[in-house]
Image: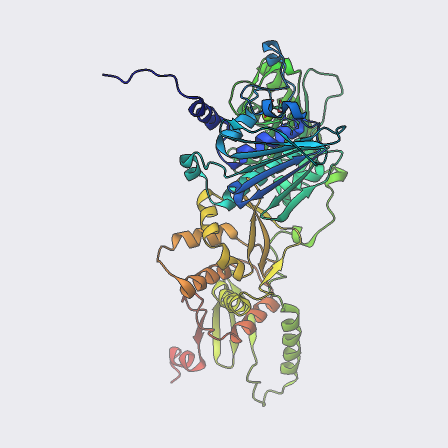
Length: 578
Ligand code: ADP
Ligand code: MG
């Protein structure tokens, strides 16, 4: 006998419906921020505790909600943004389904406080599940503040899917910085666990915000989209990367359609078509494209979270993007055209090709260099009859840009430049570990993309990394910002992804100090000079000097030798002189 068909109760219906809209903490932020933008706010501030699991608060200075409508705002399918079904085909607000607040209340405990700009008092209301309290008067600034606590307390299964607070916070930060790109005239602020993470003042255009999303390297790589003078049904604006600045995936492609942050495969395809003849396969341009078109030309009601849209005249949208992209790239002759003023970066030292010339290789290379010069001068002053100084060392050069050849009091040596530098860095990091000077903050924190696996390893080792001076912050979907690196190595490119890959490949279970030292060794390995890197003679000599000063100069932290030696006796023997 099949079970009889029954009508579900209201609470269950609410949870099922909410499940589509509120998937994780960032979904709450999205619904609330969209409401704030719809309310005409010029300031939106988001405050998150514990990645959103403990609380999420969104405050705006928008139009507010009248006291007698507060309860209605939480009713499902109650909205001020649509009058009738006809409006559904010309939506010009971000929300319109009237289920944002209802869905949030189904997933957590909500307290909403609001005051109309003209009103004397504000009012507050609480909602939880399908229970909505009665509004009470209170003092409040003009605008609306919504606080959501105990998200998914009522839906433990959902809660299971919520990742670590850091991962959830990263999603929130990504979302907010991305939506901020499309709303430059609105100021945004983000706080996490009581600390300011970032603030974006209102600006006239989106330029100032691009770095937030794409990282400092994006400066100078982006071209302002050339917009057509002729009035068109579809206006395309934004910023796209110039040829040669592509990324390996589409994550760097941000789309807005009428102010709505959307996933738009059809526009991504048009973008690629427009840059087709310039781009390499498997590489994707990055940037932001914003389309403005008559609302009746877009169907926004195809997805519960409105993340996808459908175009009534798909070909027109495709062509508008393709031609705008193609025209922009044609106009941007990377050789002749000066970069747009807004992007013109002051020439910065760390923009130089990393490691191409390793002249910043050693923190104290200048000191060592002058000591070396001094000694070299002394040596030349010595007569042949006198014994060479016991620390007399000559460096002849590199073999295969990997092995440094020289001689010292003990004879000929061949030094593995990577292993040697690894040892030097390892001991330096070990010595400074945990201290105030362990890390050197980076003025322009580079943004790197990490895979989910790499991010997981990052979160597992975040404390050990911080001890060594490596501070990394989430910076959006899969992106992380390297805020500080081990002191003394800030001029070199820090290979965070490499560190994480090595750590995850190491499956030996280590604990405590052994684990920590393993992390330090891995950091050292990815902070230093590698094989096949050209070094000046001074740098080679400096490396030799610093290796000699190590406590354990003979091996790298992984146990490989740093140096091979052939002394004079062995040479004599090899040549049959004995
Ligand atoms: P929707 O956004 O689809 O209309 P919501 O459930 O998100 O549905 O919000 C319901 C209504 O509550 C909105 O239509 C709006 O009138 C009001 N509202 C919600 N948030 C705000 C806000 N931050 N400022 C002003 N009004 C708001
Ligand atoms: Mg809404």
